[in-house]
Length: 322
Image (cartoon, helix red, strand yellow):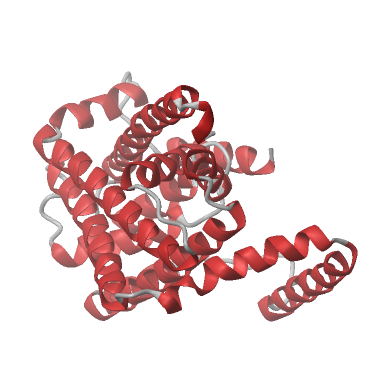
């Protein structure tokens, strides 16, 4: 509930900053920006999106092999897309739901597949950090100026150092984990399965191929952003450096624990467009809402189709396969 309220608040603040002329309607302004967009680039972005998810499904399938779980690409893809669909409603809930769906389709232990998901997330964080580093090297002056505009202080003279908060969270989690381990033998079994999935990356037959897939996946993510930026006249002139910078800002915003990154994305990306590239604020906000809505629509359609397909496969499976 807190995350939903926070998302709604951030979306409201973003729309509040959309100042239109007298007699104009904000929804109509956003629609006018949409009408000016090159739909060919948007359709190309949709195709690249699906291609990136197929490649993610291939990479996930590859991670499961060392643990003795050989799954089909189709079931890996269906489960992955259901996970994205759930993430739109429940932040980080998709990680568990896609593992559970794969269990229903392939009988893959949830704790094992979840361990491989954690590996994926670690690799994605590394890729994101590399991307941010490259973005800083390319657009150092602009990004430093952008960071300088962000004010994280409470404003009341009282603050807790971040390392204290992190240390407290880690300490509480560690003590709580020890207590649960002593009281719950079933949890120990789950953690052992989780460890099996977590260590799978070290037993890959072709580690280079795994790294190659990861690089290509993030390259496709970048191309998705590039296609959308090229689709709008206001942003098409910004150039390669701008695309990389905005992609990094958008990736950070999407990593926030909010439904589909909604709110955080609509706050940070327009701010970056305005502060770094002097784009008119109404255009920046309209662009961001359309960009995020288009991404979300693709995930909803693919997720719903995957949900229906998974249901039919499970429903029509012979009794001996269940």
